[in-house]
Image (tube, rainbow, N blue to C red):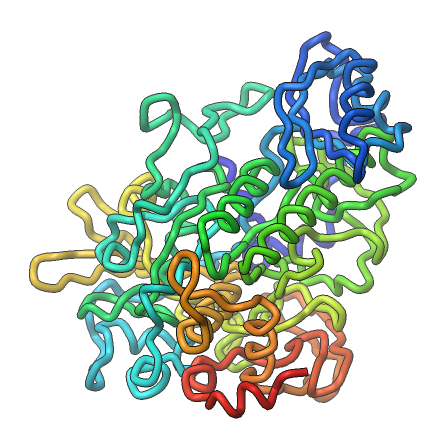
Length: 557
């Protein structure tokens, strides 16, 4: 199974930078003329719906449906020249194939190094595995910190747009809202070239239930946000909130564009308060509107990703949804990108090296209205893999860095959170009788109930810490409304920044990471109030839980 979220682990990531992928390069577009028809999302310009319909017909296609909220037409068209024919029409803002085009951005540790037993002496009110949660201690999400002051309200609905959430996991189920959760994808056993993608379907019609996660990524994210205080395993940043799965990713960890649009639109209409997006839309790592190295069809596809996601994000934010995203795991200054060596990453072996610049966007991390989060290690240094940039980094949060604190990788320096048993079995990480094969997986049991946890690292793991803090703020300052409590996203954003711990760039500003035998220099720009490594600061759950209404009002711009 091709798990893209694991493509940047440890030293392998550094080696990939030195040896970019060049095989399978495309020279004139991503499709071959076969005479087959495919599904497309045709985004029309303002007021140009009818002209876009005419352009679709003129190009040999047919309209299937129209999504007026986001301004696009679902159309069927021939793969030979259809997109190129639309590229010169000013009624068309962008065109994207309705296919798998993304992946979750997480980097697991490179080797197991923790035990699967309870071995930590507990403080009063702590969960059994709290001693392993250095990340929660860093941001003040502890029994004597934010948990005591403001654990979060069940009236706050947190949407996890991801690979799904194991809603039956014992350390998620008490906070899981099954009735509001949705699955917007259908599993695909093989890709367009006949290679294994999601693998065999587990459920009828290849449609997984809304409380299922074959990958584990979404469950880990949900657990970090809101695992309850229940005497088992871990607790999340906001252990009292409601978790809603809005699945937009495949079992393989890849993402379609359209399910992401559907998830954001649903979140807006269902009264979700805040969504976590620990992934990015592909097949392009950087979406460029007019990159001369791309074909007309590829340019139009990237415009479709930029336009479509921005419309969906705007729709959600307008309806009260706070938007939080992982920044990315390519150890890149997003203000100065130079090369994209991994795109297009679908179908397999289509990558080529292309030059990019700051006009090209990583979506949704660089989309308007999104709060993007960099990742930190246990010492509070920016993680070696985390993207950065003074314009792009809004906040920083623990994401784990197995090299932070020693020459050898150590997964206890990454993030521990809930893992689905079915995913661990599929990955061969537990034995037939349920015992962890290696210490990267932890099993905890209480009163006859057992649950599993896994160490992972990435900006995917950092973002949910910020999402949990946002949920605390909404719990405290939200007003009664649709879904339970509502709070303008601009106010949530303002208080996230106001409560964050301002953190300066390292000195010297050029920080050299030692990752195995590789040295990776990265330069931090900006001031203590906002810089490329930490943004406006490190999220602070304890401060968010205790800031007074007067202080909150005093931070209005």
